[in-house]
Length: 144
Image 1: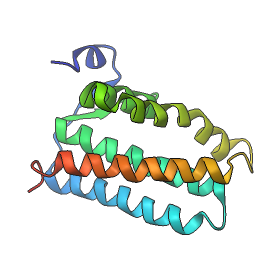
Image 2: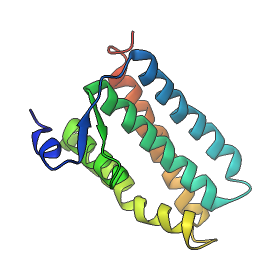
Image 3: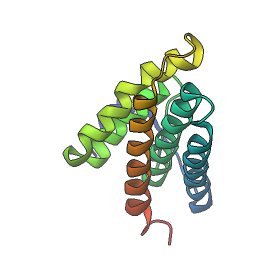
Image 4: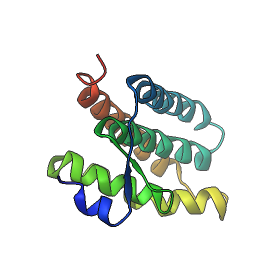
Protein backbone atom coordinates (compact mmCIF):
# COMPACT_ATOMS: atom_id res chain seq x y z
CA UNK A 1 0.00 0.00 0.00
CA UNK A 2 1.46 3.35 -1.03
CA UNK A 3 0.09 5.05 2.09
CA UNK A 4 1.60 2.58 4.58
CA UNK A 5 4.31 4.94 5.87
CA UNK A 6 1.82 7.78 6.39
CA UNK A 7 -0.37 5.43 8.44
CA UNK A 8 2.61 4.16 10.46
CA UNK A 9 3.76 7.74 11.13
CA UNK A 10 0.27 8.66 12.32
CA UNK A 11 -0.17 11.28 9.59
CA UNK A 12 -3.34 9.68 8.23
CA UNK A 13 -6.01 7.43 9.68
CA UNK A 14 -8.48 4.99 8.18
CA UNK A 15 -11.95 6.28 7.48
CA UNK A 16 -15.07 4.69 6.07
CA UNK A 17 -16.81 7.58 4.32
CA UNK A 18 -20.04 7.32 2.39
CA UNK A 19 -20.51 8.64 -1.14
CA UNK A 20 -22.79 11.32 0.32
CA UNK A 21 -20.05 12.50 2.69
CA UNK A 22 -17.55 12.68 -0.18
CA UNK A 23 -20.03 14.59 -2.36
CA UNK A 24 -20.72 17.01 0.49
CA UNK A 25 -17.02 17.80 0.88
CA UNK A 26 -16.72 18.36 -2.87
CA UNK A 27 -19.65 20.75 -2.64
CA UNK A 28 -17.72 22.68 0.02
CA UNK A 29 -14.84 23.02 -2.45
CA UNK A 30 -17.24 24.39 -5.08
CA UNK A 31 -18.76 26.75 -2.53
CA UNK A 32 -15.33 28.03 -1.56
CA UNK A 33 -14.32 28.65 -5.17
CA UNK A 34 -17.45 30.72 -5.76
CA UNK A 35 -17.10 32.61 -2.51
CA UNK A 36 -13.42 33.37 -3.14
CA UNK A 37 -14.36 34.92 -6.50
CA UNK A 38 -16.92 37.08 -4.76
CA UNK A 39 -14.62 38.12 -1.91
CA UNK A 40 -11.61 38.95 -4.11
CA UNK A 41 -12.96 42.44 -4.78
CA UNK A 42 -13.26 43.04 -1.03
CA UNK A 43 -10.27 41.38 0.60
CA UNK A 44 -7.33 39.57 -1.01
CA UNK A 45 -6.26 37.86 2.22
CA UNK A 46 -9.69 36.29 2.73
CA UNK A 47 -10.08 35.34 -0.91
CA UNK A 48 -6.66 33.64 -0.75
CA UNK A 49 -7.65 31.71 2.38
CA UNK A 50 -10.96 30.65 0.90
CA UNK A 51 -9.36 29.60 -2.39
CA UNK A 52 -6.76 27.59 -0.51
CA UNK A 53 -9.57 25.96 1.45
CA UNK A 54 -11.23 24.87 -1.79
CA UNK A 55 -8.11 22.90 -2.72
CA UNK A 56 -7.91 21.48 0.79
CA UNK A 57 -11.55 20.35 0.72
CA UNK A 58 -11.11 18.70 -2.68
CA UNK A 59 -8.07 16.89 -1.30
CA UNK A 60 -10.04 15.72 1.72
CA UNK A 61 -12.79 14.40 -0.56
CA UNK A 62 -10.20 12.42 -2.48
CA UNK A 63 -8.69 11.09 0.74
CA UNK A 64 -12.11 10.04 2.00
CA UNK A 65 -12.76 8.20 -1.26
CA UNK A 66 -9.50 6.31 -0.71
CA UNK A 67 -10.55 5.40 2.84
CA UNK A 68 -8.40 7.88 4.78
CA UNK A 69 -8.48 11.19 6.60
CA UNK A 70 -5.60 13.34 7.86
CA UNK A 71 -4.69 13.17 11.53
CA UNK A 72 -5.60 16.29 13.48
CA UNK A 73 -1.96 17.30 14.04
CA UNK A 74 -0.54 19.04 10.94
CA UNK A 75 -3.67 18.07 9.03
CA UNK A 76 -3.10 20.41 6.08
CA UNK A 77 0.50 19.32 5.65
CA UNK A 78 -0.46 15.65 5.94
CA UNK A 79 -3.28 16.10 3.44
CA UNK A 80 -0.96 17.47 0.77
CA UNK A 81 1.65 14.81 1.53
CA UNK A 82 -1.04 12.17 0.99
CA UNK A 83 -2.14 13.82 -2.26
CA UNK A 84 1.44 13.85 -3.56
CA UNK A 85 1.52 10.09 -3.16
CA UNK A 86 -2.03 9.57 -4.38
CA UNK A 87 -1.80 11.59 -7.58
CA UNK A 88 1.86 11.01 -8.33
CA UNK A 89 4.47 12.89 -10.30
CA UNK A 90 2.08 14.30 -12.87
CA UNK A 91 0.59 16.61 -10.25
CA UNK A 92 3.55 17.10 -7.92
CA UNK A 93 4.06 20.76 -8.91
CA UNK A 94 0.41 21.65 -8.42
CA UNK A 95 0.20 19.94 -5.04
CA UNK A 96 3.55 21.42 -4.07
CA UNK A 97 2.17 24.87 -4.88
CA UNK A 98 -0.64 24.47 -2.34
CA UNK A 99 1.75 23.08 0.25
CA UNK A 100 4.00 26.13 -0.25
CA UNK A 101 0.98 28.42 0.14
CA UNK A 102 0.03 26.72 3.41
CA UNK A 103 2.33 28.84 5.67
CA UNK A 104 1.42 32.03 3.81
CA UNK A 105 -2.29 31.32 4.24
CA UNK A 106 -1.69 30.66 7.93
CA UNK A 107 0.19 33.93 8.32
CA UNK A 108 -2.44 35.92 6.40
CA UNK A 109 -5.25 34.33 8.38
CA UNK A 110 -3.77 34.65 11.86
CA UNK A 111 -0.88 37.13 11.91
CA UNK A 112 -0.59 39.78 9.20
CA UNK A 113 -3.36 41.74 7.50
CA UNK A 114 -2.69 42.86 3.93
CA UNK A 115 -0.06 40.18 3.28
CA UNK A 116 -1.52 38.83 0.04
CA UNK A 117 -1.21 40.67 -3.28
CA UNK A 118 -3.79 40.64 -6.04
CA UNK A 119 -1.39 38.67 -8.24
CA UNK A 120 -0.94 36.01 -5.56
CA UNK A 121 -4.64 35.56 -4.93
CA UNK A 122 -5.46 35.38 -8.64
CA UNK A 123 -2.75 32.74 -9.18
CA UNK A 124 -4.01 30.71 -6.23
CA UNK A 125 -7.62 30.86 -7.43
CA UNK A 126 -6.63 29.80 -10.93
CA UNK A 127 -4.72 26.82 -9.56
CA UNK A 128 -7.49 25.97 -7.09
CA UNK A 129 -10.07 25.83 -9.90
CA UNK A 130 -7.76 23.60 -11.93
CA UNK A 131 -7.07 21.34 -8.96
CA UNK A 132 -10.70 20.99 -7.86
CA UNK A 133 -11.58 20.11 -11.46
CA UNK A 134 -8.90 17.41 -11.54
CA UNK A 135 -10.10 15.90 -8.27
CA UNK A 136 -13.74 15.94 -9.38
CA UNK A 137 -12.78 14.21 -12.63
CA UNK A 138 -10.81 11.54 -10.77
CA UNK A 139 -13.69 10.92 -8.37
CA UNK A 140 -16.38 10.76 -11.06
CA UNK A 141 -16.41 6.97 -11.30
CA UNK A 142 -16.37 6.59 -7.49
CA UNK A 143 -19.40 8.84 -7.07
CA UNK A 144 -21.69 7.78 -9.87
